Length: 185
Image 1 (cartoon, rainbow, N blue to C red):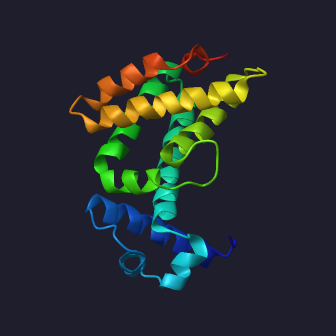
Image 2: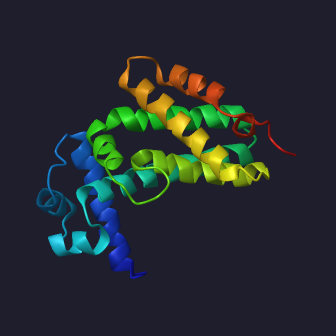
């Protein structure tokens, strides 16, 4: 992908349109998405191969912002647990606010260890692993296992009527100790 500011702007326009159309349940075709983004189909294809890929990157961007917020909260003195639970609550809100986006993103297979949104969880769990300072010969297994379990709890919880905060607390309680660790000094 080009570092051209126009290219970055058009990519962001597409991702913004993905969110708008998904919230309205109208994310149905590349043509309608391109029109909503104010770009040509060719511009869409310069950034993404499929609508599922665009949805996956839209969710990935959301989750990146949530993780950045959690790290910022920790820098401001909020406890590791409180920042973690809040992040999980926000993820439940993302799942609930745009089920069409979640469905499309979950259909995307980028050829990684896990498919769809579970792969986003795996990548972000790896970031938390590094932050934990932990070392292990079984790191990839632990990361993948934690990510798959976390994704399952949040995705299933988001489909119900329970309070997102309660779902987040339950999900947090199921995390391995290295993900629930107290702040390191």
